[in-house]
Length: 455
Ligand code: NDP
Ligand code: 2IT
Image (tube, rainbow, N blue to C red; front, side, top):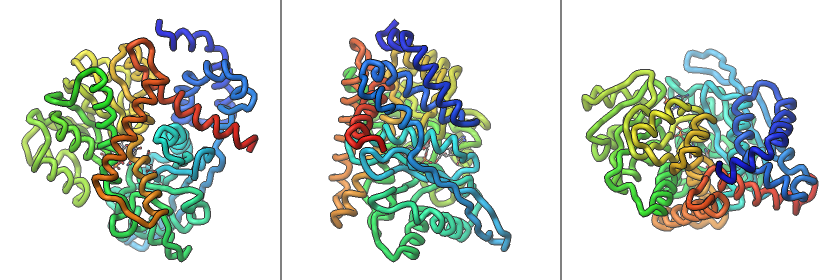
């Protein structure tokens, strides 16, 4: 049994007691409970050994959002019909900087999903080395099949309600599932119209109006930089490796591009309809096709299989495809315990989460017990919010940096996150990146909370 497993076993009673209290305060928030439990298992042994954290009830305070806003979003569709959606913003923890985190537009959005995302964001942002607190928001609005004008009207209605609660020193939203450059543009335009201020209140902006180079690429590139750091530590690399990626949106696209650039062969992509398996690898013109299909035409991944004649597996995830490296880049709980076993039995030994919490608890336990290279989302996908932080810095100083500048800063941030995980997660030669990321993120936020008193 590893030192960590022994510590958790010794502290099981405290972990259970803490989780019972969390559960008793909320109803039906399974994703939030899942995210909290993973962190609690890492940090409760530390808290028990550190009276100042225990006395100040740091973890109890971290698991209760600073503020939650919920609001109606009414808008009119192209047929003249009134539509009603629900909007949210969770301001989870502001101890180390303004609240920062994305907006998700997806029919599945609810309080549990946004609270888990906001909770993860607190630790992730702490790891970036930049001064950003954690937040998340969004709506159960479904962008699929909507016209450009409908997207604009929805974004304007959403921002009209969100506007009083955010600001460049208060809370700075960005993109997530269903929110990309187009949506950020409409949201920014509406904020400016209402407040009469041109400020860095959102990140992921277009390059013409205050956006940063490399922000679109940052999450996917960052996840691959992180996986590369893990491999390099083992004198290994992406060269000639077979890579399986899920999703085909922002994160998946740029993870693919960077993995190919580092010498990997990416053989799968997916969307909610199923996955494509291109044994020859997806790159060059095929990659351009994906970018156009997903970002301009907003089509389905099956159209790639129609065009290039490769395999398409409807209703399935790509984890059954043999690979060396897997990069889950679609959504939460998309990779379960069975998938984890299949991946490893087919030879996979590196997993870096581009998505937030894509692996179920059973899958995470299996990866950690198998001692493969496993990077949790809060470490591996932190490149996106890190470059958002760099966008805020450029906005504040009214001076944009070059592509090369931002990319090299992103690389060095991912390197430092990796080092931090190694510092706190080493168990002999094995690095438990889950534990390392949780402890490193926790200590930074906890110490800031202690310094600021009971607020
Ligand atoms: P996009 O909206 O650009 O793409 C999402 C992709 O995931 C699409 O291919 C989508 O397929 C698929 N997907 C979404 N929901 C489901 C579902 N329930 N089942 C199966 N497939 C699904 O989002 P991003 O690429 O930005 O985000 C992907 C993940 O990365 C999310 O977990 C997000 O939280 C995380 N992330 C994003 C960051 C960013 O900067 N954008 C930063 C850090 C993490 P379909 O089109 O069919 O719905
Ligand atoms: O999950 C995430 O880190 C994001 N969606 C990006 C957040 C941000 O503020 O850039």
